[in-house]
Image (tube, rainbow, N blue to C red):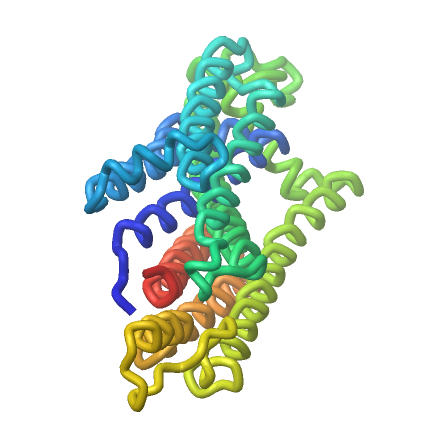
Length: 352
């Protein structure tokens, strides 16, 4: 199958952007807004713009794209709405955070980003649920695309948390050194030697909040919150693996050349008969071949699905046993790279 690289690029940019935006919004809603920086949100908003630019630049007939935009309910128009909504949501989130006295975005702005990210992920996948694209004409394709965005979001959130732990340790070490040297941090300390109420301002407050969330406070509530936070990546990894398996099973059942339905032309299309070389027969043969995975496309699709299903889940399981911040950060980055690479292989195989 001839691959449309612009479709592949837009799909990857949209799903990665959706995962990044949803991860940042979820962190902000759970009290980790200080871990989310403006550059991360800016990258999340820029990715779909880059994918849209590639899609427009690679269009052989721009007038057809303009004609599709004239229909308010067309898949292409929904994609454009989703990209604009993501951009507007990020701008609103950044402005709201800048105006906040605490330096954190309000909950409603984070919810807006979360909804925009989900809309972007679903619209990028729903665009290909068409009878003319039989390899993706299923709800399982949409489920797979949502799982890709979910796994990317979990990896981004894990990376931000691991990076935030490093910054917290650096700030705490700097505060301890200044106290030992009798510097400004120690001048405001009480005479009984207890720790001052506020040292380091909002940064240290955020650090304390992250430590309480990770269970370092030792209370039952904090341990319960830590257990819940550790179960979320595991549940997301398992859901991602199940979505990949379900979509792979559907492809193998209906669209792999040589299967019961693929041999006769998936989707009920008659296979090409060389003894009847009429125009209608040739068109039917081309439709049958376009609805089946053949040759290298089979290897690409199932290698990508295996990569998406196995590596992120393995990284989540491994990170639960790792104590080092650098090791957990490496696990998160490997998980993100594997998910994007696997999704790229699947998209190359099925999008044409």
